[in-house]
Each structure stands twice: as C-alpha cells, then as structure tokens.
Image 1 (cartoon, rainbow, N blue to C red):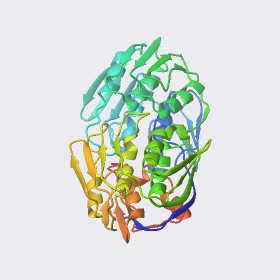
Image 2 (image 1 turned 60 degrees about the vertical axis):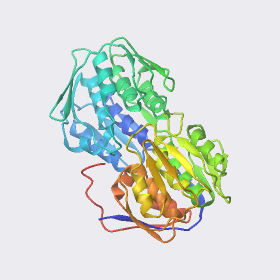
Image 3 (image 1 turned 120 degrees about the horizontal axis):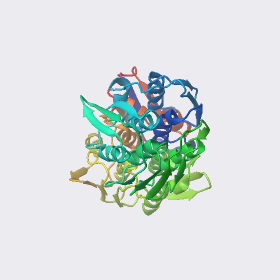
Image 4 (image 1 turned 180 degrees about the vertical axis):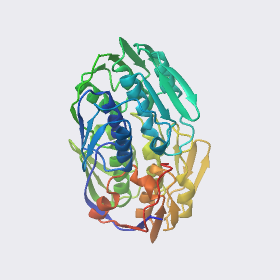
Length: 425
C-alpha cells in the first residue's frame, strides 16, 4: 500500500504554481463530445480523473491525444455506446456524459456515478432538467437511461443550487431547439469556464456566473481550443498550508477574486495576505485567532476548503466553530485529526474545534479527496512524522503535491506501491 509521509515542523518559503481547475476539467472533457471537429483543452491538471475521462471518451469511439497538460479530442467517430459500469463508477463527474451524450445523440446510458463519499448527493435536479428538455429518463439496474426524440428549450428552476445540474443542463440544451432558461443556477467560476468553451464552439449562452442562464440552441458546434482557469481549490489548499507553516509563500497563477471568502477568513485569523493580479502571497508570524466559519455555495466559503481549514483551526488561539451546509458527511477527517491529538467535537452540521493544540504525527487515512488535503495540512503542522494512507484520493485533485511542497521546504515523500483505485472514492 502506498503511503504519503510528512515530517512536520518545517517552515515553508517560496513559490507554488497552481494548475488548471479540476472541477472545470471534469466537465470540459465530456463537453468535447458535443463538437463536430477537434477540441483542444490546455492547462489540464495532471490528476487521475483526467486519465479516466480520456479512457471513457475512447470507449465511445473518440480519438484522444493526451500530453502533459493538453488534451486533443477528435469526436468524429463517437457513438452513443452505453456506459453502464466500469470506469464511470470511478468518479462522480462521469455524470456529465449524460448531458453531453444526450445533447449530441439524443440518448445515453450512464452508470450511476462514483467519487468521494460525502453523503447523499442526488442527481434529481439533473434529471428534472433533462425531462424538462423532453428526455425520458429511467433508472434500470444501477444505470440511468436517457432517450429523446427531440430536445426542446424549456424554463427550468433548480430547487437546489447545483453546479453539476447547471452544467449538465447547459450541455444538453446547447443543441436543443429553442431557448432554455436555467433559474437559480449555480454561479461558480467553473460554470463560466464551461460556458466559455461552449461559446467558443458556437453555442449561444448568456448569464453564466449569474443565477439565470439563457441558452439559445444551435444546430451544430465546432471544435476549438480552450485554456482552463486556475484551480481555486488547489490554490486555497496551499494558501491554508502557507498560513499554517509559511514564512512567506507566493501562490502563483490564481484568480484572487475566486478566493475572496478564504482570503477574508485568513485575514480575520491574523494572517497577512497580499493579492496581485494573478498571485496571492501569504506570510504569517503571529498567533492565529479563532474564527467561526459556515460553508455556502459560491461566492460563499467553499465546502471543498472546509476540511483543510479545520486542520488550520486546531492551531488557533481559542475555540472555533465550523458549520457545513453543503454536504452532510464532510466531517470524516475529524476522527483522523483526533488521532493526531486534535480536540474536535461534532454536533449535527457543526464542529467545535479547540484551539492551542499541538498535533502529533500519527498513522491516518484519507477517506476522500479534501480529507486528504486536511491531513496534509495537519501533517505539516504536527510534531514528528505523519503517515497518510488512501493516497489515491489525494491524487484525484492535486498535481505533483509532494514536488510542490518540497520545493518550498516541506519534508514529504511516498513509501510503498500504488494501490488499486477501482472504487474511485
């Protein structure tokens, strides 16, 4: 079994370069299905999810050329091959194949998605959108069957703000007849990124980044070249690590506006944060103040940063409260932090973190992607060596994690052999 080893206590100094956004990449790659000619996506993160999506595109007849950070997709040979199981079970974002294949072929069979186990994350809003566009949707033996004679524009109000549903409906509606209106749409930067790709392909989309998105269907979409936005969650994770152990760390290739809520909380804690046009610099030599935090949909505090931030709060000079409003099962890292000496009490949707605790190195397990990031933050702060198993979860979202941290002074390495990642969780 492969393990990530961290010797804590080393101060961090230098520059960390941020890669393209994972949450954009996993939607942009399926979106290439909609084109009638080659699509090239630049600035891809080097993560396992990208490789799985490339294999899925090839499985349905696409030709994929994947280099270090660029993917070129030729969709001309694609067909509506059913994908009831196998690779689609490895990551949650496989559900974007539903919207893309429905939009292109008017039919799809996609296995229910996998990914991190963060509690109930139903796809009912996706299905509601597909049905409003005219698709018949059934669930048979663990797979979703979608079929439409014709997709027609419709007004769709999302009962819950959902990034996945917003993007999936955009994909299906891009080639529908007439105009589609998505109300109560999610506003995340990754949605703007997907809308930009589709617009470059010839789609007519207005309002991406607001709560009302208007899509005028077109008959065909062309290939194009697109560069992914920087990953705000990767950037935020390294900012939290820098706040915990940094002398002075520059996080480069970021869009500071996407990180406003995190920057505000770090400053509230007493961390010195300087923003540039495309960088954020963190320096900290003060006691960290306790803060209360509530996760919210964008532009609120990102649920994906709650777990690493919780680790940081163990160092604060007093008690803090973290309230999770997005995913119910997002405190799985707490038990692992307790193994390292943290004093955290979970009650319902909230966690009370006692500050002024010096963490100790221990053997811990990453149960999901961002829990893994939380344990890396904890390992950097802890006395002694922390041994993290479940490394495959971390690899789903962080490109060259060890190399980036070693470059700024961390003592971090891997031991053992890579484990099977069939579960994809």
